[in-house]
Length: 153
Image (cartoon, rainbow, N blue to C red; front, side, top):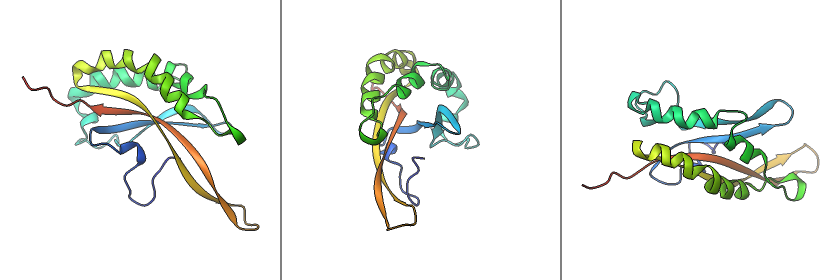
């Protein structure tokens, strides 16, 4: 879910300073509500988020993001829905930016990073084999990790 077509840049990585994202996924029938890391493979030793020097900051972020009872999961799961169950993740972004991101950024800015909520909608073609198909909006929500610009001294 949330994968981009072919080898395109994912929508959450639409800015130069975005290192990776924790993409929210839920499925009532087979997967629990949780965030999954995207844009940084565990075995990619060249990726900045995997650097040993960033282990502390990454642990701070992931302790909260991966906690199934943590505030990020609670915010993502508690979004209003519109017609046909369409999740309005813009409300989750606003709430995350108000309630969680400022506290987390206060902890991780000394390490040169920040987090922010981000949402987007992809349109997917859906066909059930009868009478053609249609495009359907699929909303997405993630928490992006960004590298702060280095300060000139």
